Amino acid sequence: MLVVMDKSATTEQIDYVIKVIEDLGCTARPIPGGDRVSIGVLNNKGPVDTALFTGLAGVKEAVPITKPYKLVSRETKNEDTLVKVGDVTIGNGFLTLIAGPCAIESEEQALTIARHVKKSGAQLFRGGAFKPRTSPYSFQGLGEDGLKILAKVRETVGLPVVTEVMDVQTFDMVEHYADVMQIGTRNMQNFSLLKRAGESYRPILLKRGMAATIEEWLMAAEYIMAQGNHQVILCERGVRTFVHHSRNTLDLSAIPMVRKESHLPIIVDPSHAAGRRDQVLPLSRGAVAANAHGLMVEVHHQPDKALSDGAQSLYPDQFDLLCQQVQAIFNVAGGPDPF
Image (cartoon, rainbow, N blue to C red; front, side, top):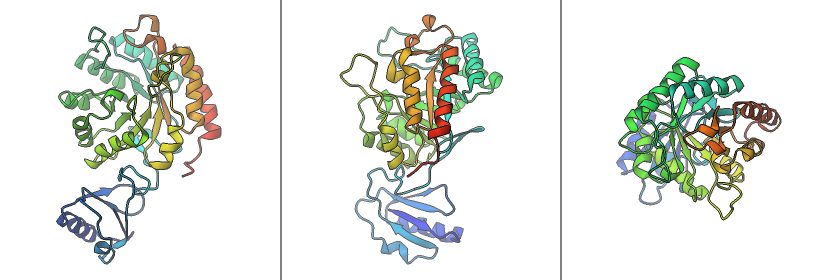
């Protein structure tokens, strides 16, 4: 249920509604945004009678929520969520470009790529310090040394940084260095990690699991928001199918579906969907045409020497072309959310 307060509701009236919700044994979760306060009623064991709230001072209406993902749903919040990362806004009306190598390999490598992608138009820098790899013998990342290099990139080049957190044990460390914390596809249903992310003061970039339905993905976002962190960015990165011509199959239909169902921003990772450099540009164009709020693209100045995912990493000049092309498409197709 969602309790919508009057625009003129006082702090005392809001606090009283929260007390009534908690006295019922439920969790009250105030929802930011808009010109009035709304309060989500969570963890109820069964239906809650709307009459308990409609007569309270300061309450405009009480609305039952039919979706299993309550806080994520447009039933709870119709206006789009905008996530702020420094001076960058991610969400409706903006095209956000995130770029960088799959893995941080050295300070020189990271700074070289960061300068290239910023010149082309990237607003955030991505790079992995901890790498979940299929093989235990593959490069696993530089760990905290990689995080320190990311901090150097932010300080020197001026780009906020996005990096993956793999577990609860290293969460505090990554949280200290990162501007946006990524939860990868393999961890989309790591519920302990999702709950810890919900307690974070950092924005969370949540990738779709490689075999997850839209509902499962949105429910994973609900885990984060239910703990109080409303700064969630969804990332479509392709799902596993029977094809062999690409690493995964990019689900462009997920973009309009998510935008209809949820107020959260959605970006696309064409690099992991493709697994091949030659597919990244056309998939990027398609994603922006489908009204994604942004892209996260892998770029490397020497991809043939990359320690991770070199085959899907763009050369800097290719990323420059990508930025020009998707900006032109966004200028035509990237208007306000129609839902």
